[in-house]
Image 1: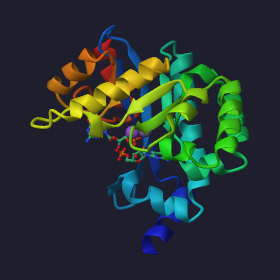
Image 2: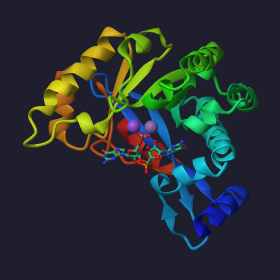
Image 3: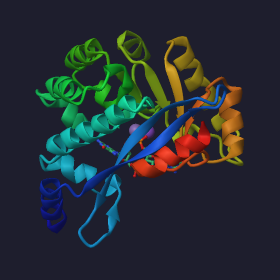
Image 4: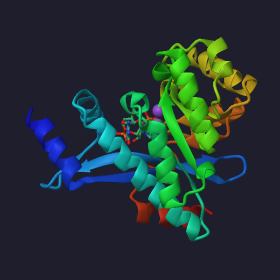
Length: 252
Ligand code: G
Ligand code: G
Ligand code: MN
Ligand code: NA
């Protein structure tokens, strides 16, 4: 409960920042975009990762205002990059609680409008498990979002048991392949599942992003299957804005 109090105070005091992790196309060398990831810096300087507070935020009603702040801050940043002639697509994680909030689509529309960010430079990441709840409503919300012109991604793909026939009718642009499917030394069997997931994305004409690529070996294995956009520590860690800008200038 002490954590919840601190979290509520943190939302009030804006003790949050976003860090950005590059998504690179290893075939063309292009920087495809960056995922915004939330960090909480407590007043004592301790940095807390979202894994320890997102669930609490979701259970306590804090996630909707916090998620709005994340969207706003990421769009403001992406709009600055855009105005500077260095447009970079930004991916923002959307919690199921946020997605189910009746004001969500309107908040996305208003944020785009107020920040001046072209909708095509925003990608919203939703989880596969969210897509399987209340199917007609989810489908309607996704269509409204798509009509705004934003891109839609399924995060942690492959972990949520989605119905394949259902996937086919959703307006999804990107599948982010969960890092649990990456090959690890001594686990040759996992390669078959990775191949199947990549094949599925290709069959559905979705962009594929391999997440959590940590080694050159994993990079080669993923690329060999035809998935060329990657995100992971092998390329770059999530970074504050200034570090991301320096990284981008060095990468280009
Ligand atoms: O950045 P890190 O690897 O610690 O993130 C851990 C988890 O927290 C990931 O599942 C990530 O999707 C989630 N996460 C990070 N930032 C956000 C955010 O802004 N909103 C939501 N809903 N989840 C986030
Ligand atoms: O669930 P989501 O994909 O949003 O989570 C992204 C999380 O994955 C972030 O917390 C980020 O820090 C983490 N991450 C990014 N790249 C790597 C990686 O190469 N290895 C591992 N273990 N985690 C990563
Ligand atoms: Mn994500
Ligand atoms: Na993910």
